Length: 87
Length: 216
Image (cartoon, rainbow over all chains, first blue to last red; front, side, top):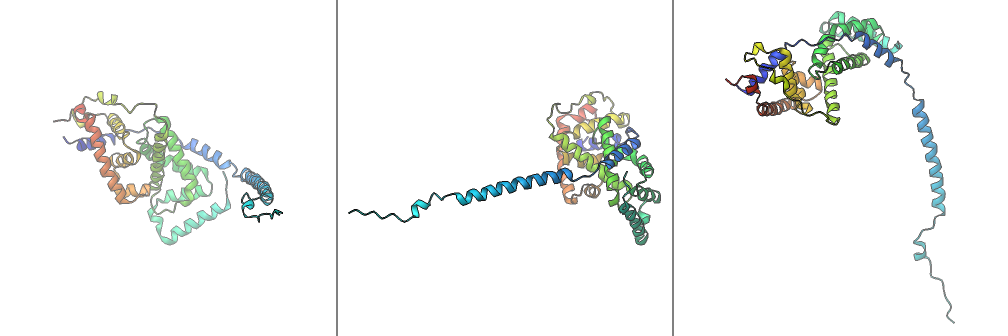
């Protein structure tokens, strides 16, 4: 017998299997009630976002300050040479 | 349970829309009444729907896991997910088709999640096949036959396994599998061809025919 035919034969028999019955209606109802009752709140996300924005602002402020005070290491190369009087 | 006014309006709109378009014939009236009542927040109506289709959904999910606890959990997941998606049900097809689509995707997701877990157990063994002594097809216990097939299918990757599970156990056509999974029909056909080839190899490697006494 062909293997695929044997598998089809097994499947035909397997379809007659009695599957269990659980009776989930009551449990589904409880889960729906508990999940439906959970408040969809954006407060934690808002708080986290606000704190992140505040931290980013501080870092940006400091970064700008440092940038303004920073000297370019290439400045010495392009600076005019000082005149030296030999005699 | 939240009785959001928008849901009530939606239910009325759905009903009016169905009456206008004449689609009411596609859905059992009794289902549609329970669906609209459920969308309005009537928990008893939804409980009636769950009781009506629980057996079919359990039968389908039993093909995804033969562990009773896991199967029950999956059945619950399907009905909870269906409840929260109920407003998207337009009544174009019978409610059972819609529930089966959710169940198939839930089962498939379950397999994929299981595949990610570290495999502590060895590959499914074939102890159950040792118990089969019958030569005649009719003498094989259906549960044993289902167990053997389940073990063989478990060796395939999830997409191959899904296609063959639906073909063998649920007698789905390629079109129906494609609709349930949102895949193209061509993809399902290719997948089925490849899966059958792999399944044949596995069955031959495991000497399925000899074990079943079907070599003659």
